[in-house]
Length: 248
Image (cartoon, rainbow, N blue to C red; front, side, top):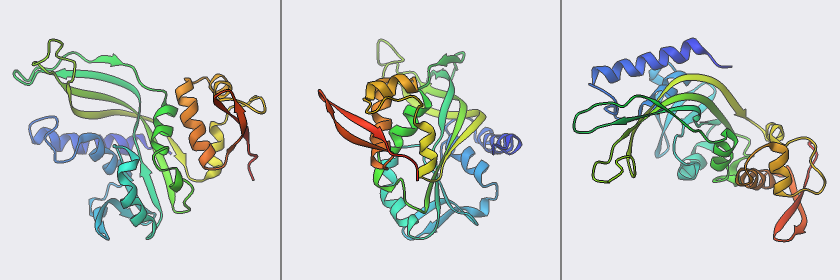
């Protein structure tokens, strides 16, 4: 359950340290990662604990919590190590509302915030899950996807005619936590199977029923197939035909 009071306290703690260090992007770890770590474990003595040859973001009574803002594929070796020891929850932030702010490196001036589009949250979640399909049903592994409103800061690239092209990312600062998606077992994935699918069905049928882009439908089906929620029962043209495997 989302704890708004604790989230705001985490934001104030981290941003207060940042202001003391004279601005955005000056902490040794990025703001988004630091805030989530503080939110999911306010007690700093449980942060940055060595497990084998790796350092876990959080170690507490419920096991390891790893804040992963980059691709899941990059943490495969670390995950394999942690999963041998205790339960692991991977936390990956998903933006549901985003404002973009440009920074002029020379003057330090900030642009006015502009609303920027966000991906379908399912596209973000399943794209990450698709990097570790063989680990998704590990009994010690679960996922938490906090849904965030955030501000994204980028440096203008003045060497380009269009200074916003090839701009470098500076930092991301969450402003609100609107919810969480938890995936703890195979049964939780069934929530992403739309109703009223024909049998058999194609990725286009899934896209229409789920009201998502065809590219998102394909990634979702890739993951659902790997964990045994769908099975391939043939082909139609160049595409697979699927059916839903009933939950046990």
